[in-house]
Image 1 (cartoon, rainbow, N blue to C red):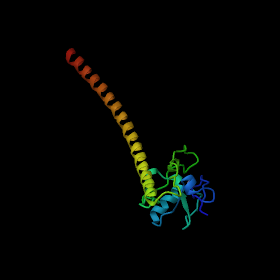
Image 2 (tube, helix red, strand yellow):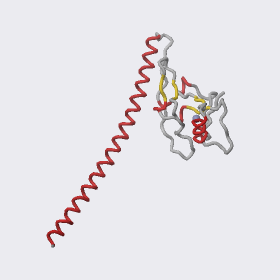
Image 3 (spheres, helix red, strand yellow):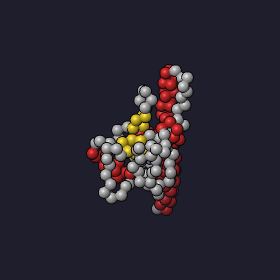
Image 4 (cartoon, rainbow, N blue to C red):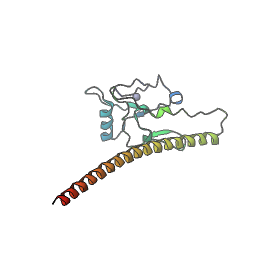
Length: 168
Ligand SMILES: [Zn+2]
């Protein structure tokens, strides 16, 4: 049985299944530096160390941290670090398991199964783009406000200067 190493997470392979809940478990990186980043992220008691069987469940990774292999296996990208819902004080965030599991029928041919996986890959990509677009939209709104503020300031300065020129 694998349990999620995140202090505040109760997910274990005994309680959840990949097909039903869409949650997968990911072992700590072998690379020492990256492994240490994970150890910090999972927020465990002092002195806790990851072992070769320690794992973090997919609930703590961003959608863009995952990619699917051609055969439809979900893999974690090399630089991924758990960031979502790792502390009890964090507001819960939507995670990848919100996507319903791929629905495969026993009668599906290999081609159909492959196409279903492809659709899922595209769904994840679309989801990421939507998120990025949203961020860009927010940034644009902030920049617009900044421009308005600067314009106001400029108008004010021009007025002050005109008053000064007129007064002298
Ligand atoms: Zn977890």
